[in-house]
Image (cartoon, rainbow, N blue to C red; front, side, top):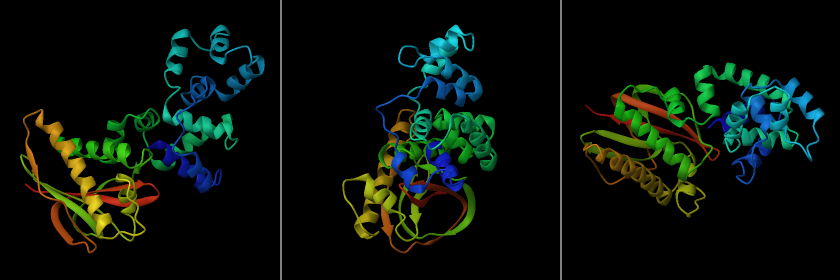
Length: 290
């Protein structure tokens, strides 16, 4: 989630272009972040201390981490902790930026500090974003109190990340008592929980899902594309129902519905979750019934 959020920040700062960001994401999985990069991001070492060490070693024959331990900058335990983050997606994203000369080592933490301030993220949320604690990230952006709604939102986000866009991100969710929907697909959940789940977007926003959920490709959001979005909702709800069944909490699902003309929804319990994925924007709307 943070890769796109931090990348957007860099684009807005004109440090990289949108095209460069799109080329970097998703981050390739065939390399690991360098120890010095992780040490700086985790504020184990300052960029100045890191540069000093880098100047002292022969990278052909010496390892930065071992040199840092021998010089007394970090402990063996701290090095082991740093090494455990080498496959972390954000660490590898920053490493890609460094490798391509788009950012310098000494710019990382000032940029992260400003990114945190602009986003209004607490230290706990920043920690969750950087270390990809998805449950805590979802709680930060979608602060729901009801246990089942929290579980549903987490299932939804996990499924979007796995099947639609690994670098999707959320905006802060909000509530409403009425809402005019755009093109949409939806499905009713009933049984031990009663809720209608919509995914809606204007124009071609639903291509974010329709063009990535299956191997089909659509140029515009037509009935087939909407049907595909409906099947994605059915997939999310099916996973949610399966998870709940282990707790003897049973729900049924109606057939998905869809239309190019969205209804005006009026309910005291509407939860709207703004989502960005694959360069598009759409809303997930949870209409909860008593």
